[in-house]
Length: 328
Image (cartoon, rainbow, N blue to C red; front, side):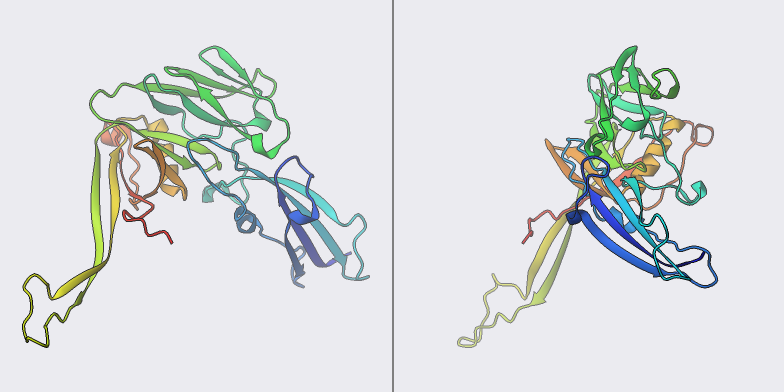
């Protein structure tokens, strides 16, 4: 038997797996099989990704959703549905990505949702560790265990374990509570001179990850404007006032930028900066508010202790809004 046509219905929803309704139907796609091919391929990643929203306000909320795909296959010979059709499959939706060398549809981490083995947090400051609840039984921080439970609800598939202030070692265990999956070293930084800034971004696993910039920060301000020429002659007196110019400025606005430095970090933390550069969603905790920023730097040179001795990264950011509020 050969497939003539395939139709898929895509449901995207929150809650528990399979709890969708007709109102959750987002797409219906249909394709005929190409005669020279044995199968029919649907690429749905970009379609379903549109339904993930990032509204981060220093609150580390849930972003995952369920995707249910119902597949109906039509037999070429009989023009009827295959036996057992439709076939229903469920997927958990993350806003993550794989690298090219990971090949097609790679399986990313199913435990600690962070690549680096070293993280940097200011002294006397608590942190957050994103983990995938399905693949983790417990997280041990300096010999204190935090048990992880998975209710099956999409809103707790990514959980953020609190890292107590001045912790040193994090160990992430499998669901059997005994198989060690990942060890992360916490580096507590005392910075007496500069003000540190916390930047949060969506990493390659689709989780919120923090990175601190401890050293020198430079704030700059650029202006955009236009001008037009003014006819300021008084036709009655054939004079013009010198307090009026010949050019008038309009459409004035400004862009605030930050140049920030990480301070010295280990090679094992370089992946954090790389993922920051590749993130589409980045925020900074600035003057008591969570504000959106955009990495302005467009090139990334990976540093090593062999080549560079001490590793510091300088990153330029633009605030993702104009200085003058022109939201209409």
